[in-house]
Length: 493
Image (cartoon, rainbow, N blue to C red):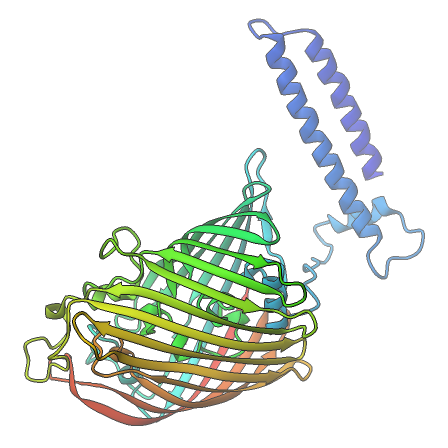
């Protein structure tokens, strides 16, 4: 009945529109009427097609009685008292969903399920997804001390061995601009542990040109294609098996040592290699801000430190005969130009960098091997950072990495990870990240399609700078053993 009324209404509208076009209004050109009529006809066809699609989907729903009236079903589906049907997600979730999304050339934040699409006539369609999490921790050390960062000393009013914590609220927005152009952005609302306030960060903002399945070019603020973790897991914690990222891949504003973000261009493609599945990546960008320690939290968004640019080259393989396997290597290089006089503790007796230089050449080498199946996950990555001061022949080395394994057992996924981050405490560009070496293990519980709970125990051998009475970091280096129990409720909306 509903469908018949719709068609009668549509036919009547076309007849009235035809009569109207035959009698041009005063002061209006016939060509203008014809253009408007064509636009109305196009919009009505789109609406009618949408109604037919909804009716067909409702009639084909599982459990519908044979011979049921599809029009009555569509009417009931739109009734205010009818139950709301949640969107059906992809049958695969977790690490396998992330891997499949990447295999298809999609951003991994689109893994598993869709999200709402905002349709406005005559402009590109926009899709919005959201992610968030809430955490709680208890440890044998003061949490504010072990998470302090240079230039942000531990506030005297904060401290304690336990806390609830608000994680990031992440909005992921995408738009298919045209057949070959698309746009995505990540906007994060994140709490600052130093101030306990909420800040807003534009984590990613990139436009991508993808003419085919074998090549893409992106420009804007992206996540650097360093190894596997930083390309597969972004700011939404929903996709991570564990509570936190590996320390070596921690974000810059959380004390991470690597250039996690890049402002510039990024491109990747496939190499004809038969069944080897060889891919290449290349990036060119501003690199990290390094003129002062406080600015090192983000890449240079507007003005680079100097004329030289950072580069990242990489290769990885995905053999056809070993589905789920990926192995690769990256080489990143950039220049760092810290202003030594702006480093915390400069001029004091405890200043830890008496031989600090104003220019360093940085090389980063990353190797990764991952193997992911629907119920099984194994990831391992190793990183070496080499900073060489101008007119010096003695490079400063920092190493880091992790190995992680998990297996899904129904709605539960037990996991274990061993990670290490060994900074060179003589390197002013890296030392502040601190030493973190040790295991963590836990279990992830898929409560439902959109909500998960993680419980995790961590044990670390930890070293970092001490503080003077003013909160300035200085020598000697503190050495502690950290035991921590954490929980995280993570969700997508």
